[in-house]
Amino acid sequence: MGPGPGQAAAARDEKDTLIYLHSIEPKTLYQWWTQAEYPRRQLQDSLVFLDGEGNLRPWLAKSWKQDGTVWTFNLRDDVVFSDGSKLNAETVAKNVEFWLKISTSVPDSFFKEAKVIDDNTVEIHTTIPQPWLAHLLSSSGFGLNSTPSLARDIKEIGENPIGSGPFVLKAWKRGDEIVLERNEAYKWGPVPGSPGPAQLKTIRWKFVPDANARWLALEKGEADLIYDPPSVKWKEAKEKYLTSTRFAPGRAQSLSLNTEFGPFTDKRVRQAFAYASNRQKIVDTLFRGSVQYEGNGALSQTTPEYINLDNAYPYDPQKAVKLLEEAGYTTVNAEGYRVNAEGKVLQVEFPVYPTIVSPEGYAALQALQAEVKKVGFKLNLIALTPTDLAAGRYTKPDEYHVYLGYWTWYAPTVLSINYRPGDGSTGTIFGRQNLNQILTTGSSPNPHNRVRSRDWKLQEAILAAHSEEDPKARHDKLAAIQQQISDEALALGFYTSTYNLAGQTYLTGLTHNIFGPIFYDLKKN
Image (cartoon, rainbow, N blue to C red):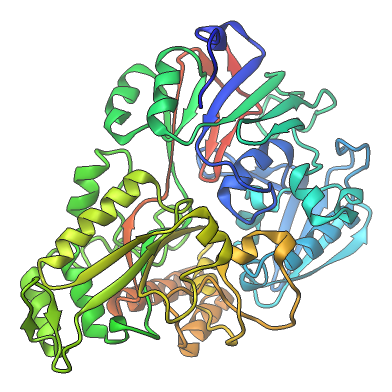
């Protein structure tokens, strides 16, 4: 549902209130997921600020430096959290401890521990040299909680995070909106020249799942700003409204092929799928310029050390057929699907998760299904429900053959997150996102390794690249890793994980970085 009757034109009239329409409502604000981090960014500050142009700037940390596996941060001494507690080095240390507990992604980014040096100086130690620690800490995922608030139950932390940010959470009306109110004591704003409280008094962060409904609300003047307008309206949006586009760092929406079970254990079948998929045409046709094709399945184009792999697997159905015949799929049945000598149909199970893939993304997968059928793949799209997602269905090794997903992480370290072989213990990405369900087992599963890689040499190469001191040599090593992932067809890039915003032209001061919008300096004229 969108804004109710009587709200037409009210958006503009309420000068101190922003009506913002978003798509997905998270269950908790402490899922390790961008959809939870969007609203949390308004509540919590980070040590480092990443502006809309990609520059790192001081925020809660005045300065920082790296010496091998030790990063030292010098903190501001005037920051107060909304519960009245002060920022100090212990606050940072407690948050690092908290982050290490709540997501496998944090230790997989080589965080080890934090040490208090004095009240305003803290060291963050890493297991190997981590050149991009400051970049990572600029993410809203690493927004700081007050020390006392971390003593609460994880459910309470997720329902009402306590930060030092420009807004505080006033109300969460489930299924409708989150209401944020200005923090009047705020005076450490990250935007140069704007050190005081936010321009807006109130943000009504409404959840409107239907993109067409969000667009209609914008057109009627019932909303100031909307997230992810329909692709068919994107050209019109750029002509009529304030628009902003950012591509998420980490990994774009990519197809991870299961190398442990099923047809994709054969490299030739993986490569055939790549040549047959016609991904660039699908993206160009269906998304109408609102997102871009991305051929690199390992890193997104806004991630440090990214290389362009758009031409790695051009559409070539003849080459795909040749590879499938070499792999033993020499017969085509009456339905047009390839069959091997044992009579097994070339069948691919593809579960699709509703919060990971938008309706337009699902249409792109249906187009993919039609394209690969031309060379004989039987691609079974399985649209899962939120209940399936919560239960972790189709995440076990033998339950899926291909998976579409992105991973937002501002460092090539996403390679370790996505390719580190796990220890075989149980764990699913979706179960671990709900933090109150996490059990500390002492094991090291890697639910984010969706290609089921068991290649420890690849992981060792990732570690060696991070440890490389020479920037050019480091880039070359990371380029080689991306090329290897492409050559082996472990993951195929599909389309950019894109943040599109469209708003009324009376808005000014929108900060939009590669993690999403920041409403601190936004105002209505």
